[in-house]
Amino acid sequence: MALDAGMLACLAAEFRARLVSCKIEKIHQPEKDQIDLIFRTREGTCRLGLCAAPGSPRPAITRIPKENPATPPFFCTLLRKHLGSGVLNEVRTAGFERMLIFVFSARDELGYPTTRQIVCEMMGKYSNLILLDGEEKILGVLRPVDFTQSEKRQLLPGMRYELPPLQEGKRNPLEENREDFLLFAAAAGDRPADKFLLSSFYGISPLTARELAFVATGRTDAPTLENAPALFEALSSFARLVKEERFAPCILQVEGKNQEYSFFPIRQYGQKGENLPYDSPSAMLDDYYEEKERSGRVHQRGQDLYKVLQNAVGRLERKMAAQMGELALCEEKESYKQYGELITANLYALKKGQEQAELINYYSEQMEKVTIALDSRLSPAANAQKYFKKYAKCKNAEVALKEQIGRAEQELAYVHSAIDALDRATLPAEIEEIRLELQKTGYLSKSKMPPSRKAPPSRYLEYETDGGFRVLCGKNNLQNDALTFKVAEKGDWWFHVHGAPGSHVVLICNGVDDPPAEDFTQAAVIAACNSTLKQEGQQVTVDYTKVKNVKKPPASHPGYVIYHTNYSAVVTPDEALCKRLLKKS
Image (tube, rainbow, N blue to C red):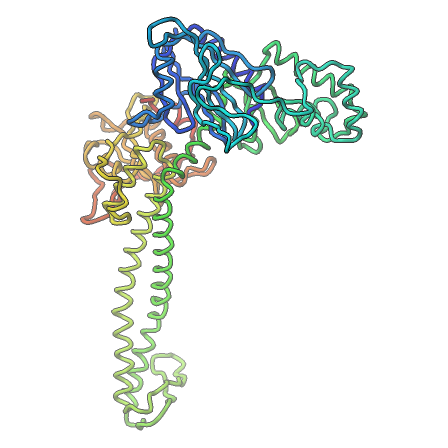
């Protein structure tokens, strides 16, 4: 769903309640299109994220910390200069446009009181953040717009800020009266109601237009003219909801998956849809975008790593297919041995120059005759030796091929484990750890490593069970090795999903030999959720054993271990449980 003016009004109401009169403590720019303002409030610190990403622009009080660059970008430095220790005085919308304006009281270079504003234009691919002074002169722009990009409206430092031009032919839905609406609807005729609302009023999204049409007529595409009075009543109720700030933020789920989000309940999907209510619109946006954005950021930052690993998967699968084909040919080795022995037993009856021979098969209970191909250039004894050599070659090849296929399977399992770790990476430092791991294992050239970059420190995921036991979880293969063989004690319990890539999980016992069964189960669920088998609703087998029983073969890949003494538990992955047990760093 696009972030429309109603959703921004809902967010503005939350910001006014929680952030007005609060002081800025820090300013960060973790992403090229996001600014984080950290406020000091009565409840503690509060992070306001202003995201101008074209695909998901939004302002929200976020709980998701992001890693900041070592050197702050220019726009971040500019904000620190003008807004450092500033106090938020006001949050307002601009009519019913997709804009929010934050007004701060700050001090200029000479220490005199001054006013500064941040304008958030949340308009899809045109989203932007603009810093203004008290006279609405532009001090800085996240994405400057010059004449080469737009002839109608430029955004450059030193220029006077002007609001975006209103969309031609559209009106403010909060100021509509019945008479004008009915005249406007009469001209629309049989046009679908949702299309009419969307094209006639600015600030509303396609979802909102469809919902208003559904509330008025019971369907989204009803004709406008014959339903004009009902449509006006629905629009008036919508306007009162926004003016009176009677917001009810929710995420609409269809078949268990997040489909839309809104600031009022969505009914148009009928029984297929379920509205999950939220007390905070910011928390709703965090939950809606967290997984989607994390995946997008990782794929963007680790795109070269994905390419290397996917190429390795393709190479290994082709190699294994060829080896399996050769191994299938080796299954004829016993026939070659029998042919050689049958020829040897019938040397007296064979002559040089024969191209084939029909001999009684003494190895079969039926004693049937078999036809054996011969090389007419060779003697019968030489033909027998030829078959014996083919038998020996196939026998030796079978042993070598099985070893090679076993090594290829281990290597393929390692590559899949690296892909799994990359899929679950959440911070740039974790991606760099995987990059370093692939460089050490030879999958990535040293020349592709960033110059003079030190390996980031390993930071495990840490959980706490309901019984008070710590559970540590590795995020990649290097962390898995360090956790299992350096951090964990021999008496701790080690968990891993059976037969699939996943994290090493250790239940720290602190001398307790046998923790309660509930803590074992929660540790097993954590292992299941941090693996490729984490799909909700499917049961997963998790192996667990004492850390002392886990061994690492010499010269094996990172993360590869063996164990022979273990127990197994069958659990169902539960992401909600893992989030509850996860300790926030």
